[in-house]
Amino acid sequence: MKGALIGCGFFAENQMRAWQSLAEVDIVAVCDPDPVRREHFQTVFGVAHAFAEAKTLLEQCRLDFVDIAAPTPAHAALVRLAADHGVAIICQKPFAGSPDRAKALIQYCEQKGVSLSIHENFRWQYAVREVIRRVHDNEIGTPFFGRISYRNGFDVYQNQPYLARVERFIIEDLGIHVLDIARALFGDVSRLSCETNRVNPDIAGEDVATIMLRHDGGATSIVDCSYATHLTPDPFPQTLIEVDGPHGSLRLTADERIYIHTRDGCQCHEVTSHGPDWSTPPWTIIQESVVAFQTHWLECHRAGIEADTSGRDNYNTLALVDAAYEAAAHHTVMTPRRWS
Ligand code: NAD
Image 1: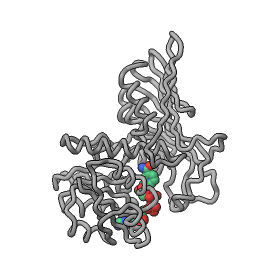
Image 2: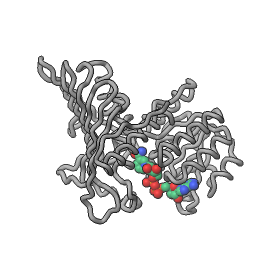
Image 3: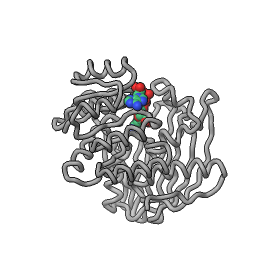
Image 4: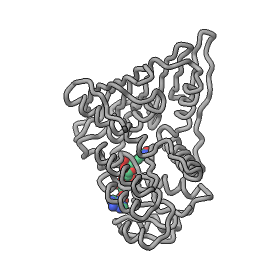
């Protein structure tokens, strides 16, 4: 598989290293309008070609796929361009910036016959995968309650300074992952309410959000996110999960363990992620999830099937983000849109 990485920023380094750890993939080109960034990637990762513009890249390189790690405002033009060249597309979240824009791009790719997947990696974290597997294997029965919780005091603005300036912050940037885990665990959502706060006075958007969801399968879940929660040790970047079912309760805790409580007692399962050899704490669980997502994408691509986080699937996660902002703005209950 010959691929190109479009966007050579902070997170793209993980994507690049993960592709280089997969023997079947060769990233033959990188692209970034910023010469410092693209030259850095070309040199450090030994990539054959570097381009300032995706148009030139796609005209000059024969590719099987592109991996778009550029920011959301660039998605529409890049996705259309790649679709016009008939190459498979992976694109970072938050995809396209709104469900309407996402829908138009998903349909465009379908018309052009190219696959579109979203780089949604949180559900691919080892501990989260294990929670999803155990719940879907019916270890505690059909869930009636869940809590998916991401709370820490990490200085996220250091690596991603643009996050301090966006009007829509924690739900769109981080909550999107946590909402996606809720969908992966309990299915799509029929009703949603949300409240937000801005605790850090130096940022433009919300840094705290609490979202309540009613899922089609009957479960109620709480998705809560905060970058204003000071804890020692700081659990960044862990997502903690509670699921209650009629036969037992599951807890994913910050010590990287899953506890399954039943009437007969409690079983503990270690879910420590060791990460790839290039991983750097505290990013280990995230970096491992990037490899896991890309491995899954490759397997699906080879089998000619959609990845779990296809464009269509991700539309329903994006719709939750949109509904959460609407619910918070009007203090009301929303019925999120979904792909139809
Ligand atoms: P960044 O600003 O560090 O990097 C973005 C890069 O894209 C920059 O180098 C910029 O010059 C380049 N770029 C802009 N327009 C481009 C274009 N048209 N063509 C090619 N390159 C272009 O940003 P980042 O923090 O790396 O975030 C990038 C994306 O990754 C965002 O969508 C963000 O939400 C996502 N992200 C995902 C995760 C995750 O866990 N999945 C984590 C962090 C960031």
